[in-house]
Every structure is written in C-alpha cells, then in structure tokens.
Length: 398
Image (cartoon, rainbow, N blue to C red):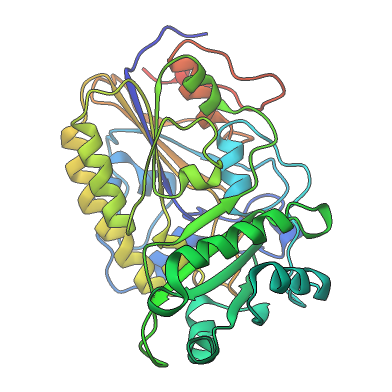
C-alpha cells in the first residue's frame, strides 16, 4: 500500500459521459457509440475551459475543444468488467464489485400479470401503463387518467427499473413512497428482481403542463458484498454522498447523504462541502446528464449541461485544499445521437487532479472501473474487501 497522501477525496460521477465504444460494445449492440465525441460533433459551440485545462480533450479529441500542452490532471479511460451498462453496475464496480449477471429488464412486454396483480392488491391502486416509456411521454399519455381515477402509473425503461408516478397534490408523496416500498418488497423475488424501484412524483393538472419534481426516490437492491465505502465507514472516515449515490448503494457504507435537486445543485453542494473540514470521501452523482439529455437523445441539452458543470467545476477547483484529491469519471455511456433511448456500452473517463501534483498526463487504460475505489482506499491506507476488483492508481500519480 502507498503512503496516505490526501485527507479528502472527491469522486464526481458525470452520469453517462462515455468516451467511446467499449471493446465488447458489439455484445450490447452499441458499436460506434461515443457520448462525448458525438456531443461535440453535434453542436455549433462547446465551451468547457476547466475540463479542457484538466486534459479532457487530450484524453478524447473534440471538435471545438483543443488539447492543451500542459494538462493539469492525470487522465485515462476505464473499461467495465461487469455484465451490464446501467447505473448500479457502473457505480458498484467503481467501489469494487463485479456484477456477473445483469439485472433483469422488462422492456419488451412490461411486467408480468402476476406481479401487477399482487402490486394492485397490496397497494389498493389499479395499475395503468405497464410498458416501457420515457417519463415525459408516460405523463402526457396517462397522468390525466391518474388524476381522474386515482389509478397508479407503473412503467419501465431500457434499465432494470420499476417506476411509479404519483401527483404530489392528489396521489400524495407519502402514498407514492408507500407504494414504492411495497413494489420493492415484491421485486426482491428472483423472477421479478429489478435493480431499482423509483418513485417519480410530478405536478401539474393537464397534458403539456406535467413536470417531474426533485422528490424522486430510488429503492435499490443492496450491494451483494462489502465495497470501498464500507471499508472507509468501518474505519471511522466520513463517506458523504451527494445526489443518488446513497440510493444506488441502499445506504450501505454512507455516513451522510445529501439530496440534490439538479446536477447544478449537486455541484453547489459539493462546493459547500469543500469548505467543511471532513476527513474521507465525498461521492457525487450528477444524474441530469443521463436522465434529462441522454435518454431523451438531446445532444444540445447535454452540451449545455456540461457547460454548466464546467462553470461550477471552476469554482470547486479554487476551493480545493492542497491535500484534496479530485477524481472525475462516469458510470456508463448514453450517446444522445444513438438509436433508441438506452444506455451505451462505453469506456469512461477518469481525471485525477490535486493542487500539489508535480506531474500530469495520460495513464494506461484500466480493465475495470474498480480503479476508483481501490485508489480511494489505498490513499487512506486500507485494503479493499476480499473478492473485489480494481488496482490503485495512487503510485502512478505524483
């Protein structure tokens, strides 16, 4: 193990920012996908000066953003070893867990009748929907029906999820959460086991005016083994989650969880945390890139979100202490120029920056996202749990 270097580590996940098709992309029907590259090619202007100076364009050539002669960060691309291309497998692998069997999906036909019948019986609500759809489309189609009848909108996507919509003013937020807790209990059975049950609250009275709110809540399957987060927590360090990190890990290994209203808000929370004297890890997920722009196949919206992130990143870089390490990465791809609305199997970036670094530049590609968790635990002088994957990069950065 390397000598401890940094008192605080900030890991920021730009949800879905892939940097080119993975070697096994053909197995996922994702040959040619390139989230970041195709965003750059699709928009007229693209300004990300802080990511640029860290070396993002050195890592992955961009149409409007040139590489810099002396990047401030170390950078590499990481390959995923787990089976799947979803949020949970990506994040879990970052913290050391290799998922051998992808989570079950119900994209083609919706959920089976016996599950829906039991969900209706237990919740007391008739289910409408029960198909794969985007969140905005399902509301335009069925929210007026839900408002009039008290029925419950249930839908899925290309991910392993069961999502339930509820109007905050008529369905009631507590009732929505109760129904989701029942759905989570039911979908722990092997034949129905989805990675997440998601509460999708919304407001509005008629089609065209419905808007989802920030009171979303994810009910995830707990990790199947201990992760880097558990190591840090068990050793008495702070493990602060921002955004949906705590939901992804079902609270395991987390000491403090902050809910974010948006990706911009998540960065604002991270900047505030940089002013706090904690000791340990700040783990951040910025979901809007994926939820608002990737799945909706909107490259201009995605580019704009990256520019807003870059502005906040500039503030964070100024707030970091000399003994802070910043790691910026992603959990999968979601190429907004690609077919369908699914995630894309891609490599992801990893930028490593600290004010006191003597060097910078490209590192060899890793064969797993687990390099993130291994680097974090190594930094604090601890070993990863048994049967986890990933090798620390700490001895490669100076």
